[in-house]
Structures are given as structure tokens and as C-alpha cells.
Image (cartoon, rainbow, N blue to C red; front, side, top):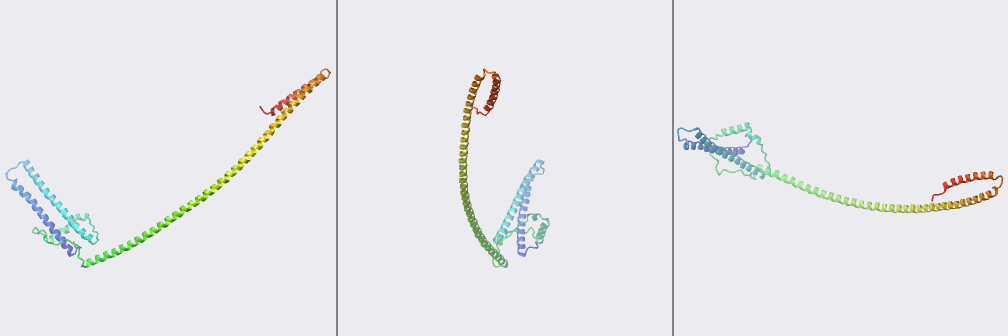
Length: 297
């Protein structure tokens, strides 16, 4: 408690008196419970174990109810006190923090007990008067108020500067976004123009390719025509050769008959016949060879 100033120390003592008065009030209620049991239930000299257990159970229920009520009321009272402190802090744009773990610090609890003893808060202490001033925001005339106001004004000025900077950054971001959109449109137009040029070039290449194919087709047709004419000439020549061969064969047959007629009565006939036989064999051989070159029908 040494770090508190006189004003805050007085507020702490005021709350301790209030808490002590509530505690004494609840202790009196518990004592009244026992007194009621003694006066209303303890009227006989002897009791059975079952009756004693019933008395204790009833007393236990009443005492637990009183204790629970006191604990709930104490917790709610503490919440209201914290709410007053936080409301006052919010008025001056402050943020208070609590450390729940310190509420069970035995050393600090002993210091509070010593403070309570040092102030001689005995059983005769009364509850706080209703006209005691409540916890309210600090006045505007003190030095602390001036300091807080100056701090708030400084923070407000910094906030305004930050807002102005934010607006400037937003305008710059908007301009950058517009530039980006313009660049994207220009890039899109450039791509479209390039695509059109590529399509035009592709069309020209296609036309040239079609012309080349047409020329090749004409040359192929011409070559095919020449090949057909050459093949026809070959077929005509072959036909003429066949006819000439038939004519020669016919003449040869006639010559054979004539020679046979002239020489069949001479002594040299047999010799000639042998010669002719050999010639015939040679001719047959030549015919066989010639037939290999004749086309099949």
C-alpha cells in the first residue's frame, strides 16, 4: 500500500470498512442461525443420533446458504467497484490491467491485514454513510487534468496527422491502381495488335503454301501425263514388235515349207533337215526367250 497516494489510500480504507461491516453483518446472521437452533430445537434433555443428525443437517444447510449469499454479494460488490474504476479510466482514454494471480499472494494479503489492524477497524465500525461522495472522474481544474488533456490533445493531433497521411496514401494507391489499369489496357491492346499481325502473317503463309501445293499438283499432273504417254508409246512399240514377230514367223514357216519341198527329194535333204531341226529348236528357244518379255494379257 506504500505506493498509493493519500487519496487512494483513503479510498482503500473506506472500502475495507465497508467490507468489514458486511462481514460482521453476515457473521451475526450465522450466529443467529445457531441461536435459533438452540432456542427452537434444543428443548429436550436427550436426543437420538437420528435427531442430532437432522439438527446438524438443517443447521448446515442454513449456514451454507448464508455463506453462499455473502460470497456472491462480495463478488458482485467487487465487480461494481471495478466497473466504477474502469468507467473513470475510460473517461480519460486509459486502459487498466489487472493481475488475478496477485489476489492470492499471501504476502500482499498479510499487508492488507496489517493495514486493517493499524487503522483499528474493530467490530464497532459502521457501514459507510450514504452521503459519502462516490468515485467520479477527476475535475478539469487540477494539474493531473491539464496533463491528461494535453496528452489527449497531442494524441488527437497525431491521429489527425495519421488520418491525413492515410488519405494521402489512399490517393497514391488509387493513382497507382489507375496507372496499373491503364498499363493493363495498353498491354491488352498491344497483344490484340500483335495477334492481328500474327494472324495476317499466318494468312499470307497459308496463301503461299496453297500456291506451292497447286504448283506441285500441276507439275505432278504433267509428270503423270508424260508417264502415261511414255507408257502408251511403249505399249504401241510392243504391239508393233508382236506383229513383226508374227510376220517373221509366218515367213519362216513358209520358207521351211519351201525348203522342205525343194530338198526332200535330194540326198542332202537329211542333212538339211537336221540343220532345219536344229534351227527350229533354236527358233523355239528364241521364242521362249521372247515370250518372257511379252506382257501378260
